[in-house]
Length: 558
Image (cartoon, rainbow, N blue to C red):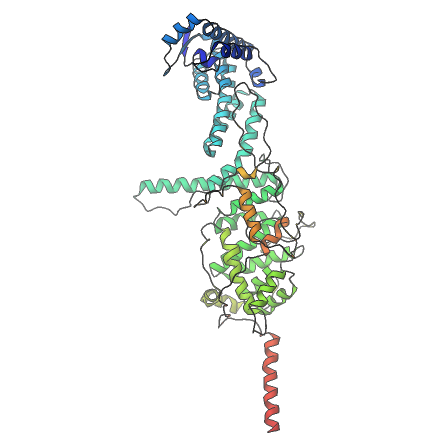
C-alpha cells in the first residue's frame, strides 16, 4: 500500500532544485552512510526506519543523476505543493528524514497520523513526535515565546512518560525545561496585575483574569525554584544551571516585577528558612510599606529582622532609619554614631550644617534613601513621592507613637527563634562589586539540531541572554548583566561593610551596592513639628543651659 507525503527528492538529499550533478553526488555520499558520531540521535530509530531512509536516499539520487529521469521528474514536480509516493512501510524512514532536515511540524503531523492509524512502527512515531516537540519548543524559546516553548516541551515529556519510552530523550527535555524556567518567570511576572473589572465588561474581565493568572503562575514557579534550591542562598539543584551569584542577580531582576504586597509575602516567608538575604529584603519591604501606608507597626517588625541581622552585619544605618520612623531620635543618633558607612555619614553631616546634631541630615538621607534606593525596586512604586512630614503628620502614626514606649526590646512574636547555628555566609566583596563571571550566566536556548548534526550539549549559562520585561522596556537594555553593571555604576566604591544592602543588588557579596546611595542635592527638610521625639538631644539642652547661665552673669555684673 502506498501513501503520498509532502516530500520531494531534492528535500530528501537536502538540495535546491538548481543543484548540479557534482552537488547531487556529494550530497548522496554524505547522506547514504550513517555516521553515529555525527547523527547519534538517528540510532534511536528502529533499524527498519534507518533502512527505509537509506532506500529513499538511493532512489532520489538515482533519479536526479539521470538527466532524462530528472527532466521528466522536474516536469511533473509542483514546487508549491511537492509530494512523493512511498510505501507505507517506508513511513518511518520519512519520519527520520523529516527530523534530519529540521521539518519538525511535518514530522509531528505524520507521527500523529501514524499513531492514530495504528501503524506498526509505533516506537518510531513516538520518538519522532518527541523530537518534533523538543525542537519546536526550542524554536519558540529562541523567538522569546517562553510559555509556548514550555507547553511544547511539557507535551513531549508527558507523551514519553506515558509510553515509558526513550529515557535519554526525557532527560534532554527536563534539562531544557529547567533552563527555561527563569525566562518563564520573568515573562509571566511582567504582565500587569489588574484589579477586578466591573461587571458587564466581559472582555476586560477575561483579560484581567488572564493577566492575574499568569502572574500567579510566575510566582508559583519562583517559589518552586526557591524550594528546590533551598532558599535564595541555597545550593540545591533546580535545573536552571544558575550559580549562587547568578541566582542572586536573577532575584534582583524578579523583584522589579513584584508589587509591595507580593514581596512582603515572599521574603518574610523566605526569611524563616532562615535566610539573611531574605531577612534584609523583608526589612526593605516592611520599611517601605510602613512609610507609605503610615503603619509604624511594620517599622517595628522590620526592626526585629534588623536585630537578627545585627549579629552578623553592620546594619546601624537601617536601625537609625527605623528609630527615626518610630520617633526615637536618641536611638537613631546612637545608631548613626555606630555605623561605619563613611559616605552616608558625610552626606548626613553635610546636610546637618548649622544644627547641634545630625537629625536634619538623617531626615534628608532617609527621604533620599527611600526615593532612590528602595521604591525603584517595587513594581508600581518607581515614581512614588513620600515625605517624612506627611508620615509624621498622619493621625494614625501620631496615635501609635504616643502609645509606644520610648525604649523597648524588639517586638516579641515577630520572628521565629534563632537557630543554634548561624545562617550560611556568602563571601563578601569589600571595596567594590565583583564583575560577573561570563561563564556562569543564564543558559541560551539550545539551537535547533543542524541538518545531519548531533544533539547539542547544554551551553554554559549566559545572563546576557535573559531579556528585560519591564513595562516600558528600553532599547539596548535587555540583559541581566546590563542591569547588574548599571547598578554597579550607580554605587561608588569606597569603604564598605559586609552586610545586606539596599535596592539593586542582593546577597552578602553585593552588600556595598545597597548602602552606597547616589546622594544628590535637594532642599533640606526640617524635622516635622509635633512629633513625639522621646527626649531632646544632650547637645541642644547644653546650649540652652549655657545661654541661661551667660544671661545671669551679665545681669549680676550690671
